[in-house]
Length: 245
Image (cartoon, rainbow, N blue to C red; front, side, top):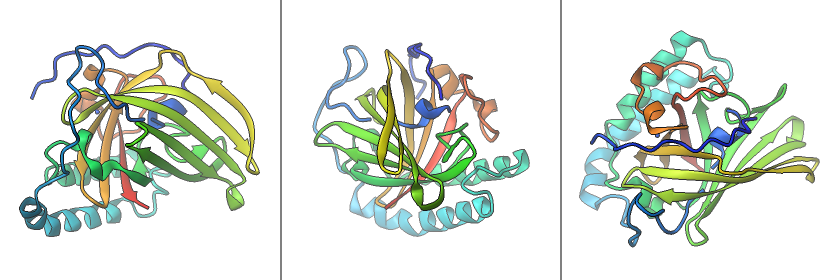
């Protein structure tokens, strides 16, 4: 679990575990100097959605084939990660959303289908493996990351967070607290102080999402870091593929 308190250094954008790295939230207005709040725009025009739907479905199925047998990235060689990264990049190239960080399509529950992040963001907590979810509530401007692990989901964790919209693809995420539960009963809660991440939405449609996350914009743009296992505490980007539940 990443308990650091360093805020990311935001820089001008050229043109996105610890438990805190992947578990994050939406904020209704932008922080001063980071962007201007305005009404959310539709995800994508119907014409664009229609023309890209078939290719995007094909690309997603190719990605699923690459991740098969990896337990959503928990059991994955570096060679496999490089191949999966290529498949993710192929899907990102078909992104139909003009402003994914501001889209109503974000609303709802998403299941993490693959990640290169360290535990527990990758769906494991200690020796226990499970499934990670993200619940986004646009009306409240919040989200909750949930992990359900162990037989019959007896072990759980949830992280609450807020976000500030920076531009059409970027969120600045601020973590509130994380709670670990056993058999449905909360065991303990840890609050965070000034713990933030930069998230980039690189693909979004009605059914699928790709998010890249890092401590800083520099880490987010470090191309050489992609396609490998992320290390807890480093600054490089992590990737998460998700499908709507």
